[in-house]
Amino acid sequence: MTDPRFAGIGMTSARTRDRLVQRLREQGIRSAEVLERIRTVPRHIFVDEALASRAYEDTALPIGFGQTISQPYIVARMSEALLAGGPLHNVLEVGTGCGYQTAVLAGLVGRINSIERIEPLLARAKARLKELGVRHVRFRHGDGIEGWKSNAPYDGILVAAAPLAVPEALLAQLADNGRLIMPVGGEGGQELMRYTRREDRIEKMPLGSVSFVPLQPGVA
Ligand code: SAH
Image (cartoon, rainbow, N blue to C red; front, side):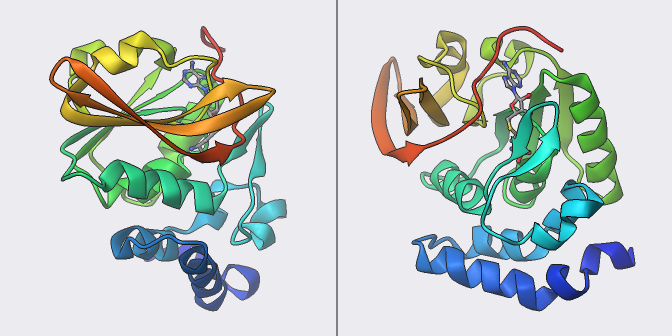
């Protein structure tokens, strides 16, 4: 991470990032390792240069193609929920988007398998993560509703877009004690959910209301 752009200046400086971390702590994020990733991963690299000065505000921002980079609080909350319950060796991420969530997770888990349905977004995310020296990520242009069977089972699955109901394929690809963190619901309201596999039973736990872009079928 020697590129001077990664360190940031002014509104992208270390002090600005520290303020964001402090805010997330106040909002209830407890995991020191997650907060450290939020502090060190340069979020401004993942958005358009015109938006870089807003990269450390706790807000979602447009990344093109009608999609958004997730709000830092949500990235932290989902990462923390995924990590609770033991180490993660093999993780599936659905909805790579700009790659920011992937970069945050990369320092915290073993291998990541990341699927995105919009090809130009995936290409950009790949390039950025390579620049940042993020390794141990396998990418796929595809429909994450089907999961990624050949690399399953997963001890963690994280989905960054909301379906009306949890996709069966994702539950089927969870390892024993594996957890799936994802928003579920439509325009009337979405709930962030945690599904944990206990042998052939699935434990369900609501984690609060959220607002995500819809999980869409097919590729673009
Ligand atoms: N964590 C990402 C979030 C991006 S928004 C970030 O911080 O940038 C959610 C992403 O999910 C979008 O890029 C959207 O194209 C993608 N998506 C929606 N439905 C999908 C599907 N069925 N399979 C894979 N990706 C999907």
